[in-house]
Picture 1 (cartoon, rainbow, N blue to C red):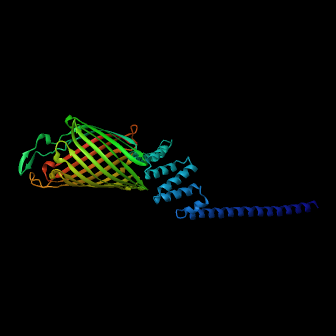
Picture 2 (cartoon, rainbow, N blue to C red):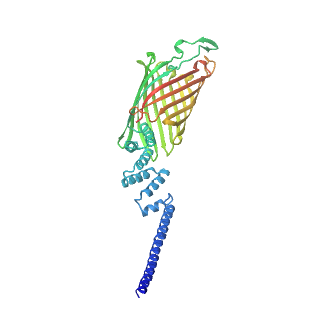
Picture 3 (tube, helix red, strand yellow):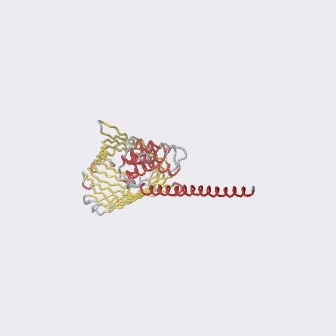
Length: 436
């Protein structure tokens, strides 16, 4: 009897266990299937909707989603709608103030909008933080250098020690033919070499006057040569209004400069220029046109009235390489027609970042000058072809304070159909340049 009872109890327990395990298995299968179904649906929805085509609709559903805001900011940046993009980045930073990458995006947009003060502020905010990767600091420093060149309020210093084998742009010829007869060249007209200690300080500041921004600036430089007879002082001032339209900037500048050798005045220059500047994501374009007036104290025949037009573009830029080009046309009308000329200037520029942070800036070009009048004394109309190569070598992570040491090499050779103007000038210099 007891055995039968025990068998019935055991049988009932087995049925209960079987039912329990069935229920548990069903519940587990249900949750697993539900999890994969929901996860797959969610990820599929994100892939479908999180794109630039309908990001505005997505932001209506979740206006404070940082990922969505970032996509929207990038979209507006690509469309060159920098003002709206800046507003979005500021909103992202307000929502997530400790994420440094958004400060960099904001600083870049402010740079493109010519807001150099706030752009510099945000770049420096990231630059001065701890544990910022070296490649990020390198990129920030490049922006800071460009800002220093463009912002309205700044003071720059340059100190340079160099050697030049032709400081007076003299001739290497021993004789010259005048009216077909050879004459010996005076020794004072021969090329002279010298070491040079060059110092330069320049500054600018922009102020709002009755709602209009006015830029003013100054430039002073002094060249100290071994031969004191060639020491040269140059100083000048400039002033003019600045206008900004969307992503374009226009400047109208008047400048005056004077050059002296020792205490003797050599040259006065008056210049009026109209400059147009445009920023895009990976390129810059500069247009300049103007007129100038040169007055020489030692020979009034050299005095000229000139006009010019110039185009500069940095049209290709990647992480380690950039490429640009310059073209300038000049027409100078001289008091004495023998010295009037027409010039075409072509230059190709490139920048390369090599191993161990070594950076090379290379430019090469030619200036073709055709003079206005036949000169009987030389039995021809003068024509010059000036070829040049400039090489700048630096390490973008070597600084002495805010000063970067640089090595500059310049090679210039002028080929003329008049022998006395066949000249060359090679220069090597060590510079200390204030970067930012």
